[in-house]
Length: 476
Image (tube, rainbow, N blue to C red):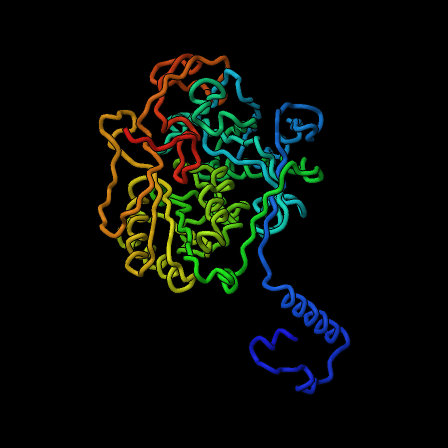
């Protein structure tokens, strides 16, 4: 049976007298016919992503970049030379930090898990030829992380000052943060004179992505310790055999316009995504690097998108409790007019294109993103789509718990809210022996090596808009 029989019952190629054609054209037609028949016999073509996970147990510098017995050895000079090709940097310093060390990493801008496609140039198209994300094989160095440092002086920073973001490799902060337990490769690019701040920030993100792909390349020929597979058929096939299950979509914000988008920062498929309208994505594409966390990374790092807990949970429940119908990526506008525009488009895509019965929504950022998320949830409810939203709560003062957590909207239809916590608790962090990224910065007059008191909002990786943290809800 040819592919045309799906649309014209009884159709046969013999019913049409072919015109004289070139032999090569005839050959191509027969090849296409053969592939089409094979596809129909096997059923729907499925986008399948295989994550080949290599567990990293230690890191060190050495003469060659390689992985042996779980130990990642890095040729620091080779990696530095790769990153210093970028003329936005005066130089790039590289450090490593291990769990348990009395080490403090400050001025953290983003964290990226080392990953690379097992084929082509190993990148995701950020620095080389574009490769499709969401399918094929990707090498993952689980337990390792590339940490980006924005160590500009305070006068050079914008309203979201990265100096408040730290990772401790030991003590209480390491226990509450995901990144206190990873083997960290820390990049410290230095701003070249004459380069603008947005140019530097875009280069900083690109340096992290290059380093992540470079490190993962070392594992491309190794046998994986574990393989995670994610597959979901096209929209036309996704509900086959699951007609009785509710269709659920995920609507995440991938960028907030609270802060001016950085020109040239690769946030969606390698380009800056500040002007997008709600866009349908395959969930595999997010897991495979299509989305990165836009600086300044408001409690969402690129590492979190790569290991997205909500997408993973929807996959686990797919075919059992629900039918995972896809993802609608949107952004958080900074004005009421665009709140309605984004809400209407996202809800319409969910209802009339994906046929959703339910939706999960998350935000990125603070007040404006929260209102935009709530408005989208309200519009979904008005169209008959039941919603649940997940969010970090806000407050008048992140450093003083007496002000309490707050929710800045009150919408009767939006009545299913999952709290991801609130960032008011303070931790006393003990002294350390080494600080990475200091460059003369002090905290309230205190020595960075000494004992300091910090709120959870300052401890990088302690909180997450998606919920992938070590916290749990307690009634008391």
